[in-house]
Image 1 (cartoon, rainbow, N blue to C red):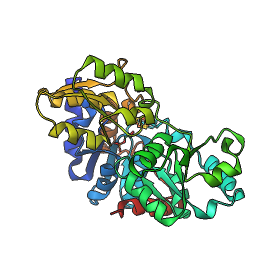
Image 2 (image 1 turned 30 degrees about the vertical axis):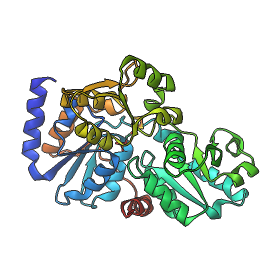
Image 3 (image 1 turned 60 degrees about the horizontal axis):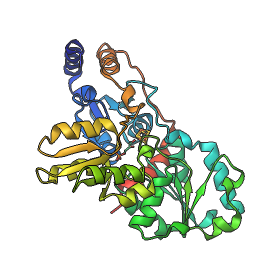
Amino acid sequence: SDPALVQRARRAKAALGDRLFVLGHHYQRDEVIQFADVTGDSFKLAREAAARPDAEFVVFCGVHFMAESADILTGDHQKVVLPDLAAGCSMADMATFDQVEECWEVLEDAGIAGVTVPVTYMNSSADIKAFCGRNGGAVCTSSNAKRALTWAFEQGEKVLFLPDQHLGRNTAVLELGLSLSDCVVYNPHRPNGGLTEAQLRDAKIILWKGHCSVHGRFTAESVDDVRERVPGVNVLVHPECRHEVVTKADYVGSTEYIIKRLQEAPAGSSWAIGTELNLVKRLATMFPDKNVSFLDKTVCYCSTMNRIDLPHLVWALESLAAGTLVNQITVDEDTTHWAKVALDRMLALP
Ligand code: 13P
Ligand code: SF4
């Protein structure tokens, strides 16, 4: 990265001192993550967001839904800043509040809303988290989806899982022992989600038809190919990958888990990783004694995570240091209240 920009980021950060707290998701670029005070997966970052109540500014190097969650979980006096407002998440965009309300009406018409617990993946807008809070549900991340779903099935007979069908299916089938036929997919673009009332009544888990385009690129063939090319390779993937990929993999877990697995791996072992490229490249650098490769032949970054680059970070930090608040992410009071109910249910999971 440009040494002049690195210098400017350092200077602005030093000028802000304890007034500033920088959080960085593992998918961030190297040039950005070097300035994070704390790095983590979505769960760790949600927990850490409130860790510095004295910091006036929480600069979130990640995507929009993460910054929203940080705003919900931090005090009113703290301001959350996203260095580029265009850093969204295509998966989170696959479920809008209106669509989710409409889906709930479909469940009401089928007579099952009263026994259904809505659970949303962290990768969703604040108003969907609030919807879950209002309706007895919770938030989950990839590192606690099993515990969140177990909890949800203690509260009700059925679960509506938003918006990542893959995380929902992988957790329900591979972790909770449900069968594939217990899962149905609700398509918000079809009348009644494309489902009959009988299908809805028979299902144990209703999966929203959303997915991550980055993790969706890995296929069962990617796993077969790498096993052929690299004898003894360990295949380690994120649970946002398709069901057939996760089924074929040796290990599955959140970004924090992926890093831990690599840390504990013996020298000389081979690893094919099915997750975002910035993280895989960093792992290859961090563990030169292990053979780390990307699971697919064609490599892929998360384009929205990558929008947070060093020029945007420098601009945000220098603006704050100069007394100009830029790119603040705020969630209104009512949404904050109910989204926090859903987030707190997650944070209280055993
Ligand atoms: P985790 O860091 O929680 O594993 O999530 C990955 C992700 O896709 C964030 O957008
Ligand atoms: Fe969203 Fe996928 Fe990017 Fe994560 S990797 S922020 S789920 S698009």
